[in-house]
Image (cartoon, rainbow, N blue to C red; front, side):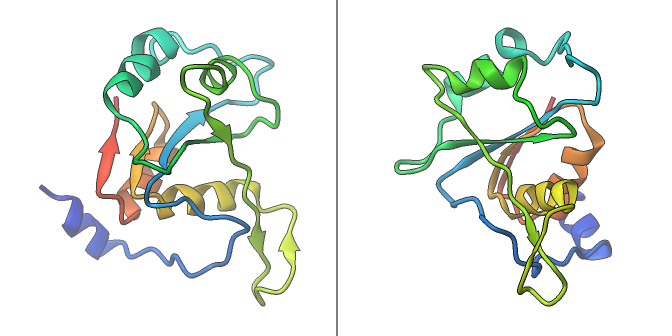
Length: 146
């Protein structure tokens, strides 16, 4: 479809250094946790979205399920469920280095999250334009979206 054309029109620089990158064996999930005390997923919860997807889609051998949660420092709701068996997902909190690539930029949370998602080759995204854009501008070969 149009994905290669959109990527050509909107080139995205992936050369900023971050503290960690996803492996090509990892399955990266974006979960949007807004600033509310508790983000309730009405349709995109463990039973209706993430669980059924993860029954079919697994990390490659040697990889793991990595979670990027934006906007909320604490793991809540569906994130907590994914950390438990049988999924054993790992919450990832990368940070960007500054423009000189020598020191960590502690205020880089959202930018680092976006860059981490954009580096993933296998993505499960949610009902968030943040993860949709990261997926579109990435070099991902496998994107699962609602």
